[in-house]
Length: 417
Image (cartoon, rainbow, N blue to C red):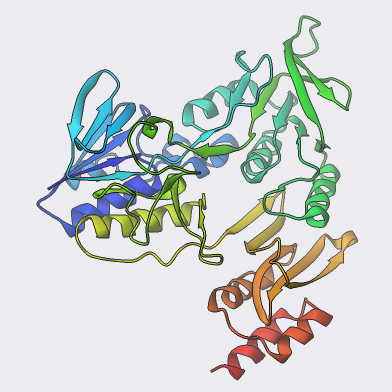
């Protein structure tokens, strides 16, 4: 049996290792598109902030880890998949045949339609090569503009602040982290960053990036509605999308990502997907969704590999969950944090202390939550949502005071035990 895994991130590496354990005699081939050892993109900010070296980003610190396990590695760009002919097409190399295929190609960064994006000194922060380029320009005291204040942008922001740069953040949305925080919490994060010395412009578009000759900075960014901003470095964190372009002629069902069933198998038998490129079942809604977080990537890689080797293992679905540290302020969103039709919601806010909690209910079950500066509730909230436990009278308590979540958890779990 020949297993081919496309993508050498957490999902791909976990899958390759699982395949080897489950089928010691099978052939396992791991294809990565970068000239680097398998690494974690989520470790790049730690490299930028000088907390780790490049080797600290590697998923397996022993350079021979995969070789010792008989996993063949190929560093080549994949240009397509012939699903019916069971072949992976490579750029500048012969196709590779497969019996079972896993697509674990992750995501690609989005490039905003802004003039001047292709100049040296304007970089995404997605690959190790991107990080090397950023390090060249992000000297202490240099002026840096960060385009995007989403989840990834905020992680990069912390690394840039730790490098001692003068940072300006420009976000098109009306608040920071708009895909995991509501208006109130997103604006609290914005004010927190401003208090930490970061300039933040929300509801702002960059119209163009012009090279400078005034000696003040490398670039001038023309913005709407704020005044032009000078920068020595522009870091782009404008979002990502599942890396599916090479699959457009494959015949696989694609929507946001590769659509899979409960066994993580695509619309083509023998071809599976895992990680950020996988559009599987959302645990809370039952609908298909992409959950681009590393724990989900590793778990889907493991379960896909089990199914590829014939060990039938359904995937229960993943829950939307994000935990973010923004310059020391911890924010969390779980489940259906935007609420459900006909549901109830309650919130409590303490702006001076940057504390916020918002709960979403469907009947008497907790289905979503947002917290800011309240880390003591994180595990309990997740437990209540995932257990789908009926809160009964304890919902009334939380509607009066949502900070009494621990009390409600203990009462409801005892009542239902």
